[in-house]
Amino acid sequence: MTISRGPQAFPRSEYLRRLDLVKSDMVQRNIETLVVSNQHDITYLTGYTALSSYVPQALVVSTYEEEPTFILRRMDAPAAIHQCFMERDKIIAYPEALIGNPEMDGYDAAIHYLNDSTTGSLGIGIDQYNLSTATMEKFRTRLPNARIQDCTKAVTWIRGVKSDLEIEIMREAAAISDAAILRAAEVIRPGVREADAAAEIAATLIRGANGKSGTGIQGISLCSSPRTGTCHISWSEDVFRHGSQVNLEIGGSRHGYCAGLMRTYSIGTPSDRLRRVHEIELAGLEAALESVRPGATCSDVANAFDRAIEREGLKKESRCGYAHGIGWTEPTASLKDGDYTELKPNMTFHLMLGNWIDEDFGYALSETIRVTESGVEVLTTAPRKIFEI
Image (cartoon, rainbow, N blue to C red; front, side):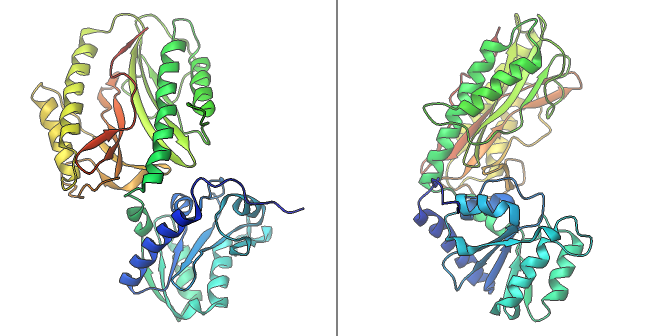
């Protein structure tokens, strides 16, 4: 028996459109082959979301071939055949002997493939973002006739502008995020274990919303008093208590696409300090949203937010957002002062206004947003309030 191709998140034409964008960039760089190892870029170009990037794997894009070739571990090849849009002969499985081998690994299989084709004597671009110095030296030594060029984040920048089909998937992920935030308001109660509340939130992220299940799960950051000055920390073994504040960051996930969302909860009446910070951050959020439009820059958005909260005596040291989509953070554009990346329609960001003010006090508020032709669409819709329990 052989495994068959499963349901595809996008039509074949969508993947070919993305590959055409990458190939156009390759022509401008004067390379014929691109080697991609970043798992999220591979998802973007193939539809593959299975967990296998903990071992070497490579997607080879050629300007001479319509479909890319995916080289990965043998035990993961069936998942690639099932999930990827390509024909099964474009999935190459390397043997298990290369796993845990101190002399060779999966990148040797990729190099062998390149040498076996005419590619070994052409211009080769390599995304070096996740590759070690030793791995890059291996590529240079074993491909002596190739013109090797650094193409770090080339695909990541291209996927920054989403198609309408991608935006629809992110809307589905955003609806799941909204549902999880509302579920949290139902299960955060005095005496309830934080772990039990997190389990209910996770169940919502998996069950999904509007008939669309979550197809993956992102990390859940749940910080209750006195830990609200932390940011990326999970639930504890403690229980919620009356008078506690709870900061929550979650994100629905559909086919690898995420929609981040943060909200703050108060078990009992919020403190005056929390209420004031909330009002200031809301004003900053509105200022940031009003500044989002094509032609503006990431710096413009950040400065609008910063000016709004600083007028009220509050500062935020960290950036106020980042490019967002496949795999949560897209390591390209940041909503911070000095980032002059131009906003374009269908760019998506996590407008992340979490503010960690003292070691024992912070605040959480965020939205997932899309740049439109004339302004901004907020994809997440949970109430912008302190949820009083």
